[in-house]
Image (cartoon, rainbow, N blue to C red; front, side, top):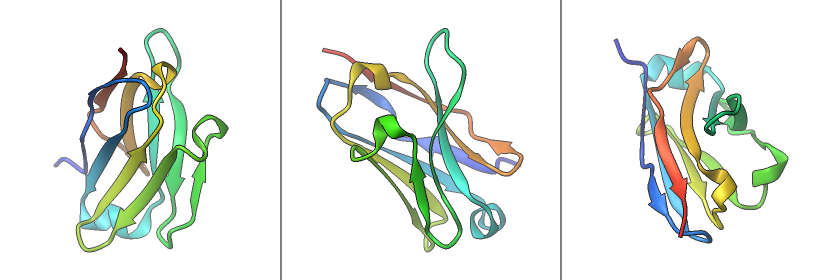
Length: 111
């Protein structure tokens, strides 16, 4: 049974925007902090942003002011709005909650 499904990755030019979505099962969505991680080629997976069940958000320093994480309780979905994208944001982005990981979605920032 798939618990987390990401969507929304793609290729974008520097300075552009993308919106990632993580669709979660209702049980997972309702009681867990949901986070986005990313893994660039040759690097370790890193935490990017998280949102608690009551909507408290947190971000890694390098994305503050550019990325916004939000949750939609009607759709059991957590989104990551990414603006002013930089080549160093290129990575596979993963949604995570409790014991579960999504399959990942590729984000490529290049001219």
